[in-house]
Image 1 (cartoon, one colour):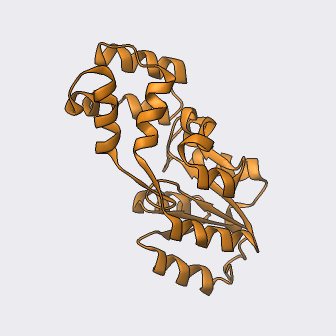
Image 2 (cartoon, rainbow, N blue to C red; image 1 turned 90 degrees about the vertical axis):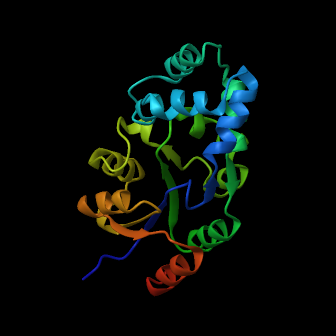
Length: 204
């Protein structure tokens, strides 16, 4: 029998908010006077963002290396402004999460560096208001989803057994990774399907 759910653990980008990489690249390119293509290579093509998300480098190291790749110093304010430009809250998904919070615990687990979670109040105010301090970055756990330790260390920190956690993510590999570690999972493809899943489980 499937265990009852006491925690719903949400991914952020692609679920609770929409993520526009192009807007982020264009904003940072305008700040430093280069092309968006150069920014995309520096952040993603070089592997720098993946290393930051996995907690392999500190926030200061990340910004310093990004500045070297772009041949221009990158301040925290520059980075945050560009990141802010990339995020649009998904109000319908947030409304569902708020309904879940009436009956169960909720939290966020996102593949991101600590710069994002430490500044969530500026970057994504609706998420900050709803989830409070329970917004966790993969960098905190030393690996990005779908690495096993990312899920297991997060639910352990929250004091909830994996089997009593429903993990919601828009990426199949991340959902499958959670299921492999004993969590229950739902791949987010839209608000209607998520609403049906939550109703079927008695979570809303």
